[in-house]
Image (cartoon, rainbow, N blue to C red; front, side):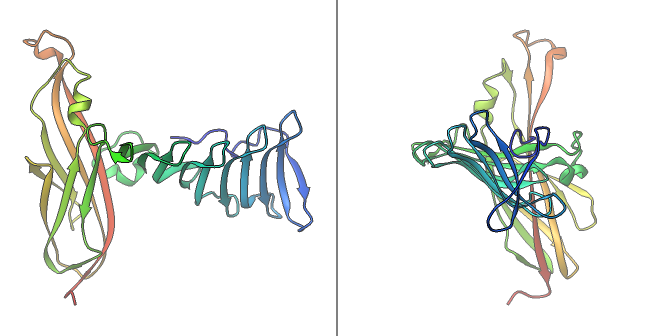
Length: 267
């Protein structure tokens, strides 16, 4: 998901200004004369420091921080009334990790996790360098709407021991809500694909949304545990249910990644 219209386009006329603090700024204005963009710059004319975008009526719309032209920092969008609309992280001009969205009075509407497909290429993702929503949690009156939400919880300590360990995963699926968009769905299968210590992929089948996965590590040191949660089913495009040619695969994927340390004993 590419961020748009937020300080990353320099097609407009570049206006430079030096404030009383001797800092150099990139400035862009609305036809009314009100400031549209204001961003600190370094001597190499790269964004460096606070960057802000404003509504045409002067209220703050967006705020983030750059370091030598790179925006890998927190970002905030605002309503005209000054309340936060959404907040999260940018990485390479894209939404990254968890973003939280609020309504105009401060109630949480949703939480969404954004990931880059490049980080999970070993699982066969075809669209390289694309941003996708990995998990989505929606709220109604301050309570998680389980039917429309799709997310998981991974119970995994930061330190593991040599030998056998367990990873616990609890999945909240919106499969039933998703499946109603199709004429016919079959039997849902659930499995986890886990990258093992030999950099190979193990497939583990499960019949339940709460699962305990056995993993074994034989070397001391920092490791990255990566995996894919797959919900797979078959659906029919139309009502000719006796036609196998109309059968298609419905596959919902979620990915996880965590760095842990393996030691010879846990104290």
